[in-house]
Length: 83
Image (cartoon, rainbow, N blue to C red; front, side):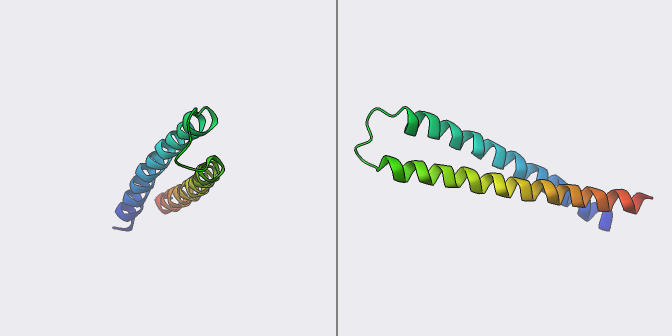
């Protein structure tokens, strides 16, 4: 039963990491095309938007690192249980 729980945790973590990677890519594209190469930014402050996207990217990278470490820990527990 514990093995199934660890496998489900790894599977859910992999799905979350794929969602985070997609959001990091989306945020990087938004930063490049909507902030760096913007022609008309009358409605928002460019510095505020830039800082927001950079902070979001940094937070997502940290969370991705946390998920990867948890996947490694789950996998190591599973591997040790098999021996």
